[in-house]
Image 1: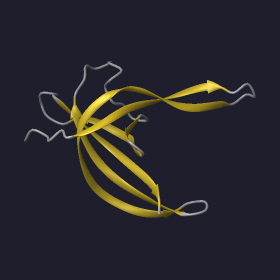
Image 2: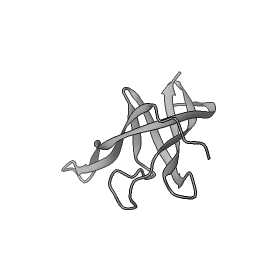
Image 3: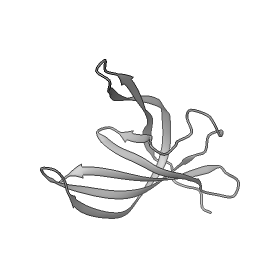
Image 4: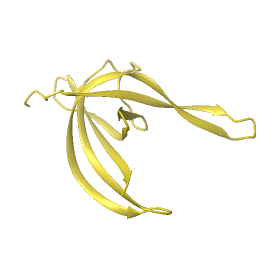
Length: 112
């Protein structure tokens, strides 16, 4: 495996739910740390949204691996943020046999 080119600064965020007092909840996002990553675009598609069409693009995001159980280690249902861009993490796997890097399968959804 070639060493990835970690040239993009991404913020890892986790969902935080708080009771809204009416039996439901509100969701916000808490920053867990910064990762430098290699981002590779995969496939894309367009789907019909409620009011406008949505564009979905899949990405492979490679980051340095953290210790198992560490809050800075990416997990599915978390997301990476790059300014206004948001990459929802769908799956995480080790990228190399020594476990030095992680490959995150992520998706970005934008209004077209």
